[in-house]
Amino acid sequence: MTATTKDLQNIDNAHHLHPFTVHHELRETGPRVITRGEGVYLWDSEGNRIIDGMAGLWCVQLGYGEQELVDAAADALKTLSYYNTFFQTTTPHAARLAQLIAEKTPDGLDQIMFGSSGSESNDTAIKLIWYYWNLKGKPEKKTIISRERAYHGSTVAGASLSGLPFMQGIFDLPLPRFHHVGPTPHYYEYGNPGETEKEFALRCAKAVEDKILELGPENVAAFVGEPVMGAGGLMLPPEGYWQEIEKICKKYDVLLWSDEVICGFGRTGEWFGCQAYGYTPDIMTMAKGISSGYQPLSAVAINREMADAIVNADSEMAHGYTYSGHPVVCAVALRNIEMIEELGLVGARGEEISAYFQKKLAALDDHPLVGQTRGIGLLGGIELVKDKSTKERYQPEGEAGLICRRHCFENGVIMRAVGDTMFLCPPLVISKDEIDELFDLVRKSLDLSHKELSA
Ligand code: PMP
Image 1 (cartoon, protein in one colour):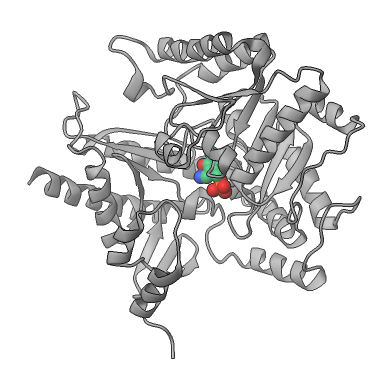
Image 2 (cartoon, rainbow, N blue to C red):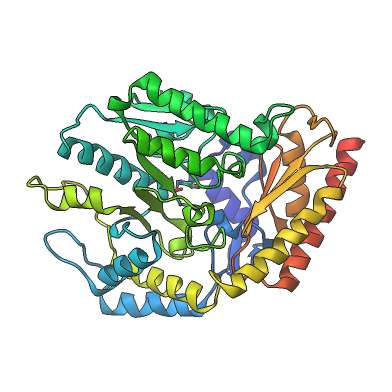
């Protein structure tokens, strides 16, 4: 006998703690049960078909149920279900994947270390940065500067790195050595009246420089940023921002770290977000799209200078995980990256689909509930407002986002809400017809939300 939705909700409620959840609320309603996925669609346990406008959690580049990835996993499982990369050992898939990633990263970032999640890769990056400065004889260079509203994961270090107080206070975080700088580089919200986008970019970058000077450049190890800020509100960098940041990091000998966990592997149209915005980091972290979420995988890439210091060190780099370079996970990621390339998802097809998606997104600007749309590649943000000209929001803030999210679910489309910003991040394999369907449902959900909010 197959379990009913209610059965599954009951056992889930009895035993399962969920990420980022108010549990007593969830236990009143019970979770939705997702049972199947194919292409850009999901099905729930009641048989409803849902178009996934969020690629899972920003990760399913190739969509659900791609047979080639299933085969890659099955073949690898049959051949070598597990082995580690400790003790002077490698596996064919881990070695080849490191090589393939090194080909895609900007020139010079060609040394790769594997982990299983974005948070884990960020922890690794922090340790490699601290280790590097120790090896360089600058052990005081340990402070890491991040940005207000950044999201860098939820391990102890990831949450410390993030600039979201609601993730920190309840756990007595952030740890020392982690500093956050504002304004968040998001012109729509933080630009001053009369200030151009360029001027705003310079002001944001100047705030980073001021923070470095306040902390003392001799103490600052790295500056970290997402090319496009994701979970904190889908915020695109103002024009010229990254070029200015790159200059400042060079000037003060601060490592520039690009957190590519969302932006990597074609999301912005290039292999990595730093390439889309024209800057070259010293260190990159990546996850999600690296394996289209079919297997848990993350990686860190470091540049030659960091690699030289680490490779030539006499001390053991005493860091790594049981699943660093897991052969099955690496086999799936290899095929995934090859397919992103073969399908032209970074390339002609990607460009065409992104342009179509961005055109449909921009067409929502005329909607009475929409204050702004913004996006790059297959990323889109929609700002919900009460008054388009003054940008005034509905009160309490965040309510409009939740109402819209509910209408989306009820109408068979997944958009995520953070505050009153709605996010879109569909699988890269989405077709034009599916984009039409997606935006028809998004518009319908906006109409219903507007009606409810105006009542
Ligand atoms: N960095 C960024 C930019 C992210 O968006 C995320 C997850 N959304 C992470 C790190 C953490 O990744 P994970 O959830 O796999 O630990």
